[in-house]
Amino acid sequence: MNAHSAKKTFLSLLLILSLCLDIAMTAHAGEYPAQSSADLESPGNFSSASDTSPGDMDENDSSDETAPDGSSSDKDNANTDSAGDGSSGGNTAPDNDSSADTSSGDDSSEESFAEENTLAEDAPSAKLPADETDCKADGEMDSLSAGGAAPETELTPSAAESETTFITLSAAGDCTLGIDSRYSHNFNKYYKKKGDRYFLKKVSPIFSQDDITIVNFEGTLTSNKKRARKTFTFKGPKKYVSILKKGSVEVVNLANNHSKDYGKSSLTDTQSTLRKNNIGYCRSTVISYQTVNDVKMAFLGFNALERITKSQIRSGIVQAKKNKAKIIVVSFHWGVERKYYPNTKQKSLGHYAIDCGASLVLGHHPHVLQGIEKYNGRYIVYSLGNFCFGGNSNPKDKDTMIFQQKFSIKGGKLQPENNAKIIPCSLSSHKKTNDFQPRILSGSEKKQLIKKMNKLSRKLKVSISSSGKLN
Image 1 (tube, one colour):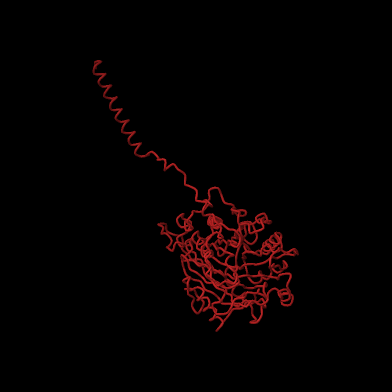
Image 2: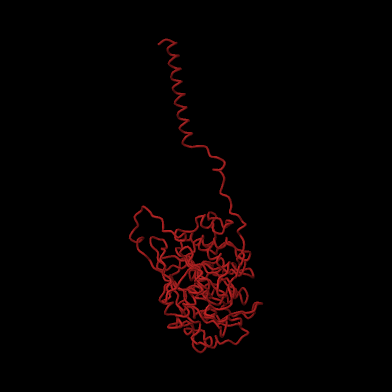
């Protein structure tokens, strides 16, 4: 090969190599397109404009003080296991969790949750969008909350996953085990004369046959003598915890306006006493986890009479989901005393909790019954009224009830069955006074209370059958 031919061959090879390199570069660029500035931006923070307390909301209270039955309102006065979180009663609070209760209010300004409930760095933001329904848009609400069926999966479920687990929950209203120290009510006399089993004797068959029972514990279990500067303060000796224990109550809500009636240490006393007796409690930043029939449940409580932000509600529910709770029950202390219809604030908070993933919302504080709403397939019980209530020796409205719901879990998901009912009760076994012994109603009394609840729930689009079943 002469020099001219060699040079020609070399140039041809160089041309071919250049073409191959161009092809390779083009293919590479097509597989990994350049990112735009929009692609590189991090997700924006939620607007803090929505971090408003319910007190800032418009409260159009259209309720009146006349009972639905036409009477005037009173203007006078265990079958659960520990969730394995290392604390008695399934609570996430440490042995001395008074650090979570350092303010004079209900500590609703705190964002973290005791022990394992402290929000991790990679948890969803606790800030809320300006639109209160953005829990839906942000994907916090699961398929049942959205009113739809659970998404289908191509995986074949195991035999265990295909089985359905049922859990029956009972919920009752305000339980004040004791008295205001300035008044000579008879609660303590009844305890001395009749013992601890007396108070819940007539309803304990309901509580003992369910899987888990929750009530609103309104008061303190303490020996403190210095009362808070307020109209009414409630306390009982620590031994009164046996009333709950022997009445088959497993969880109590402490997020209310009487949890510190005898100082901050009275709350600590109450919490300690409950833990020692394996009774769970929830309030503010403390979630109670209970494992029932191998299903993890979370109980959250918020005192809406104090300043509370929606971000706290969402953070608590997000934390419960992160800790694998399949059923999330949220209790609110809200509303106006002796009002029979929920106000705008109650509806807004109840809807928001369900939008964020609550399975059930329970309400307390009005001291009378309010209606029940079915919102996006889940129930909001706006007020359960008084129950075993030592705070009033003779309330005019003695109507109360037990709300009971049978949850079903299949394939690790909460199913949309409508299996809920009310059990009509009176807070007293005596018609003309309060003997502090709730009883189950029957006959015409039961019929009358169901009629009353139907009237209270009519605008909330819930009807109740003659047997008490919710439709």
